[in-house]
Each structure stands twice: as C-alpha cells, then as structure tokens.
Image (cartoon, rainbow, N blue to C red):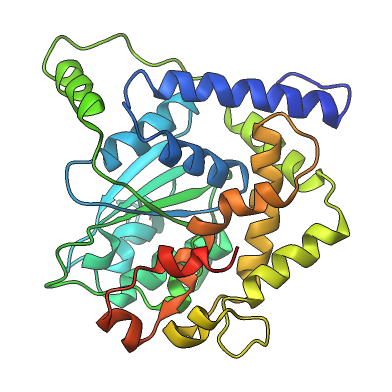
Length: 321
C-alpha cells in the first residue's frame, strides 16, 4: 500500500481513487450516480446501507460490481422465511475425528448482500444485525470475529409486503443510510438494454485493496470539523423531533418521533467523507446537507395523519433546511 506524506496528500489520493471507482463502476452500472455516491460514502464511513427499490433495478448487480472494483470478498444471502440464524453465521459440526469444528457461514466475507432482508423472521434478522454492530458472531457460546472491512448492504422490495417481517425502527437505526433506487431515465434505459443484450464487455479492474479501504476509513475519522458544524448537525437532528422547541410546524404535525444521537454521529462522519471524496480537507454545512436525507429518512417516523394525507418523508425532511 502506498505511504502518504500527510493526511492532505491522502485526501487528494482518496478523491482521485473515488473518481476512478465511479468510472469503473459506470462501465457496468448505467445511471444511478447518486446511489453509487452514497454506497461509496457508506464504505469509507464504515457504515451499512439499506437499498430500497422495485425489482429489476440492478441492486444485486450494483453490490457485486462494488465488491469487484474494491477487491473485496463477496457473499450473497437470499433471505427467506425458513432461514435460520445458523444458516448465516455458521455452525459447529462433528467431524470424522469426533471433534466439533466451526464451519463459517456466509457472513464471513468483506461485503455481504442481504437480499430481501424483510422476508426472514426477526430471529435471523437479529443475528445479522448483531454482526453489523459487533463485527462478530456468537455460536454455541463462542465469539468469532469477522474480518474487516465488513459491510452489509441489505435490500428491500417496497411493493410486496405480504409475507414479510418489516425491520423495527430500532434495527433500522443500525444502517447508516437508507438509499432509494428509482427507475432509470429513458436514455439510461436504452443504454442498459443495449449493454445487456449484446456481447459481454471486459472484466472490471480491482482498484483498491482491503488494506487501503481500512486506511481511508481511518483517514476520514481524522478529518477536522469546526465546532459550529457539530452544533449544526445536532440541531438539525433535534429539529426532526416533534417535542423539540426548534421543530418546524410540519414536523410537529406529521412526525411521530424523530432521529436519535446516532443520526448526528453519522451526519458528521458522512459530511467528512463527502468533503474528502470531493477533494476538500474539511466539511461545511453543504456536506451535512448532502448526506442528510439518506441518513435521516429511515430514522424519522411519520404519524397516522401524514400517512393518511399521503405525505412522503422526503417532503417533510425538506422542512428541516
């Protein structure tokens, strides 16, 4: 791994690597630039992400592509109603020598795609969320550490709710971001059809190693932040809470409860990363605002009145700014 003279030089290198990553991912993923930006932000912030979109928007392909260009080990878990915790964490087996041996499950990878996470029972969801939080799994009373960097990118289908087990808000809070995928534009969809109905292109090139990702994650944490920005991030989160005196009227009328302190933490880390990826050495309010929507969206819960009137959470979040 390259050694940098100081953090300023490392930030420049990170910004250059970010541009190369986007270009390489763009060879296979057409459009979805905002989604790619946010996923890369989650990676460099040591965060997990929840991808929400209708079927066919290349959620799985996107995560596979990111694992390929980041040169990370990758496992995909299809979540189903009969999936047990041991199916993802691993289990102990009795080998030919009559000794118990631990067989690792698919969680033992750098990048794990939890496909349709809301289709599996809460017990298995809890096993995954423990791994996300602790970077380890516990099997038969024994703790097994997961190799870092470790990320979980989970997917949810927003249109099929029958036979699902929605994640409680406390579990959703473990995800740094909730990222929504929308339909591609007409031009992008034409390019997608052309690219996927012809001969396959050249394989993607891995551009970063696991060690480099860990280094850049630590670099993000060292980026300085002015005290005024800490105050701004905390005040922004406080405005999502209906009981707070600074909350806008729309929040008081339509929000059941707002985000907690973890949102403030992620706003600061996300702002640091957004600034660094764009070649700047310290974040400002625009960086906080750039990452605020995906960080707050799943932490702010609408009340019955908002649901009855069909108000989207994105509309209410705009009142915060």
